[in-house]
Length: 218
Image (cartoon, rainbow, N blue to C red; front, top):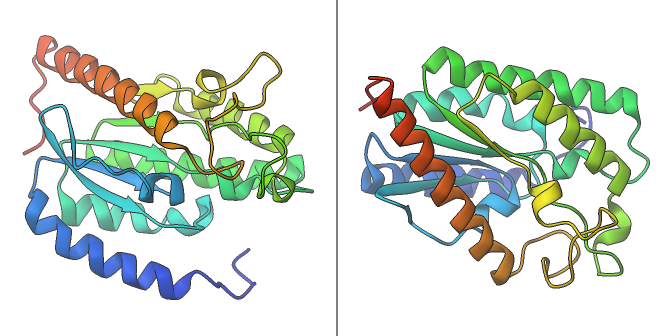
């Protein structure tokens, strides 16, 4: 994908400026939420007691996000992070070989959090809601396959895993009715569910780190 023109570059530049200006309001020790448009659309500025620095980039894929992660960790100095990426890697006609490459970049991203000693909660890409406007551009099979790979990579290395691929799914693996606005992007209902899941996961992570005698990064 790096050899193709990037139509999102102007938007990403704007997001860099917005994120940079927001860092001073959040300050060190906050929650860094990194990812794609689903992250960018997350509209809460706090999760529990933690202020949220929203580092979502619409249209971004795993390879393009990877080099941004250490820069964001270094400049934001978060106490905890949340990661959601992979939806834009799961386009129609995506091959298993291509997903192998995506998984390698995802592994590197997890490594950046390990190197920075920042606990991270990993989310899998949510499922597709059939028959809506953007559905035809994405592959449900690729999304499910990548989500399984993400769980495998993250297991035992991250602070928590929230499997949206399963949490938002109906009995057949598609998103439940009303979970998205256009087949891909989350509805207000789904965002509320996501917020509640993150609050529980991060509270449990914080409590566990406290019980282990691990001080959070400040």
